[in-house]
Image 1 (cartoon, rainbow, N blue to C red):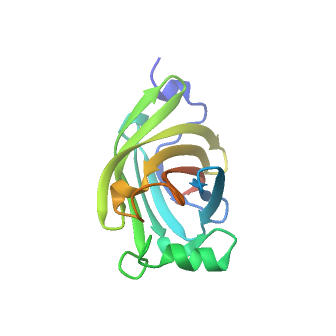
Image 2 (cartoon, helix red, strand yellow):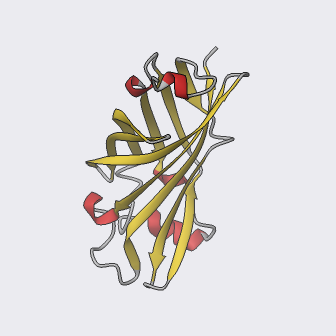
Image 3 (cartoon, rainbow, N blue to C red):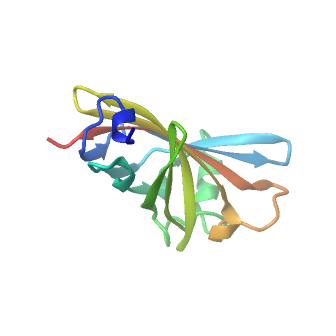
Length: 175
């Protein structure tokens, strides 16, 4: 059985990420005991589903200044040169380099650029499915080490080095 036959309603085409119905969240340890959470409110992207799903591709851009932790002072601190330095690095980008099947789920391999540093990453991805009205849904997760990208000070006493990014994405088929 091919990957396409395993995906009910699969449609090849170009899809635009619907930022109104999508979410990019992150979680990071705070003071070694708790977790701080936040999201990015500004992002865009494109998913191209190929006839063979494993030949599909994804590109996305995140507006780093759109960080939203629910606390204006913390947001301002994370935006400054101590962390994201949004004036010098206004975007973070992802470009897929390959897709692999992992049981019923998929791994999307790619290059993530943050803070001017590009590193390979692999997103654990669960396909939500395809709706008849031209809607595609998926969820993905990746754990990054922020210091690999030169973000913030090394050592996780105040803010942990590992950041979990969770994506819940809906995309619309271009018409």
